Image 1 (cartoon, rainbow, N blue to C red):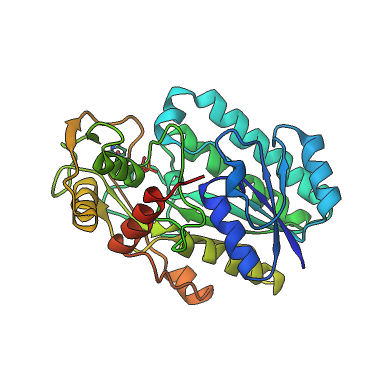
Image 2 (image 1 turned 180 degrees about the horizontal axis):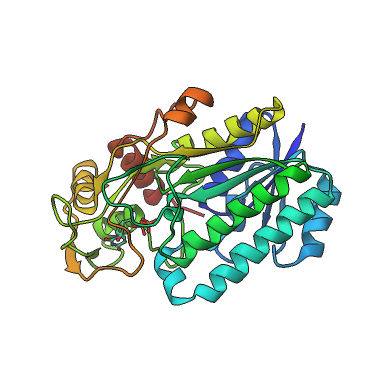
Length: 324
Ligand code: UDP
């Protein structure tokens, strides 16, 4: 079976990608430094422990496994933290990405799938974002992801073909609850809401209630993680068919405010969500909604599980399980 290197394969999205790749007939080789990932999340192929800042380790895994393609998920990925520690974000995400791209090319692998983000767009009020929208990131996380997009463009005349996926709020969990979301510390809205409902922590703090939106809270576009990784497998097939390097946005086009997600979670879990209102979080854009017409029409992507109730139900089932 053809192998695919999955950086960050022990992380939330990477582990789901490994499952989708295995189901599609590939062997996923997870490459992860386990700084935030979980050994137990690697269930669908081998785990190679290694760090993207170590070029020799990347060369070694590529030589040992000879993958046909690379899927690059490994990254520091928290907006707030990236404002506190910008140097770490630029060093680990950008230098790590450069090492990986150079090693990929040196190994003669010409297919690269990159996990990018709508955070590369910055704060563009009232705009439905798509592939043509100009990118002006407002935090180090978005900046570091944009830098890797630019690198891929610069390397493509040298024979590297790529698919860049820009997405924002990934939620939910594998409907079979084999893998799910487990960050420590957790910073993402949906798992924090579920922890608050379960009494595993105090109230959820809503970061900012004075934004210029209908209910004063930020609006995001939430995509089910299993839909998201399906697009990555479709992107791999796209490159295997010899098609051109492309950027695809992955979202539903529907925006949900923080308060709307809280209300939906209360309905799904049958429990009140204890909340408290807090100040804005640095680096947060008001509204990020991501159109996906191009992915739907060209890639044939259908986000069939990305309704808010299903994302919350699947996340809830996972959080109620033993986890990793
Ligand atoms: N958010 C919040 N309280 C929290 C965590 C997140 O109000 O404890 C808000 C955050 O300000 C943003 C949205 O929920 O508007 C989604 O944040 P998350 O960190 O999940 O993802 P991001 O949008 O930063 O990628």
